[in-house]
Length: 135
Image (tube, rainbow, N blue to C red; front, side):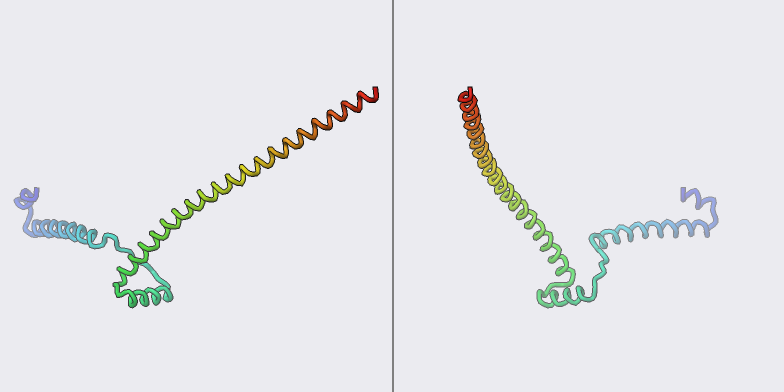
């Protein structure tokens, strides 16, 4: 199509089309480079206090600012994972403890119920005996 345009179009149009094509190709190449170079980049705003703390941490650790931020994020995710596992095991312990307490309460209630049944039977027997004596 561009060859046909060259045959029929004046040189200025041909050069403009070629320049536009090169521009688009260059833009596409730079967009690919830009995307791969910018992958994983974030612009983050820090408070002055946080920035100073981060600067001190960088000096102590000897890491770059990026490496320090990445290390601290990794640590926070690891801590979150550990605490969720810890919370899960605590919940399991708490559930077992609650189950044990519930079973003990049920046993106590069953014992109390048996005692009450025995009292009812004894009361019925006394009532029946007193009725018989009245007759």
